[in-house]
Amino acid sequence: MKNIIFTVLDRLENAIILILMVLMTAVLLLATADLVYLIITDILTPPLFLLEIREILEIFGLFLLVLVGLELLETIRIYLKEHVIRLQVVFEIALITVVRDVIILDLKKLSGVSLLGIGGLIITLAVGYYLIHKTLPKDRDEDPEQHETP
Image (cartoon, rainbow, N blue to C red):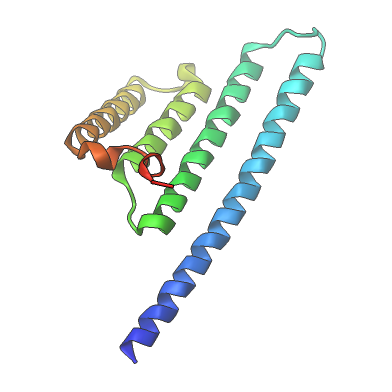
C-alpha cells in the first residue's frame, strides 16, 4: 500500500514538473517575442537606429529577465532528471536577478545605505557562488549530457 502511494505521488510530482516546464517555456517564448518587439520598435522610432539610455536599460532588463527564465527552466529540468536542486544554478539565478535590478535602477533616487546593501548582497552572492563552485566535485559541476554514451 505504501509503495502505491509513493508511486502515485512520484507520478503526480513529475506531471506537475512537466506542466511547469511547458508553462515556463510559453512564458519564455512570450518574453522573447516581447524583447524582439521592443528592440524593433525602439530602433524604428525616430531618431532611427538610435536608442536612448532609458530604452537601452529597458532592453537590458528584459534581456536579463529572459536569461533568468532560462535558468529557472534549467533548474526545473535538472530537478525532473535528478530530483535535486543544484545550489550553483540557484546562485546563478540570484546573481542574474540582482544584476538585472541594478542595471534598471535609478541610482540617483537611492540612499547610500541602500547602495551599500545592494553591494553587500552582490558580494555575498558572488562569494557564495565561488565557494559552491570550488567545493563541488568536478564531475558534478559539468553537464551530465556530455558524458552520456550512445
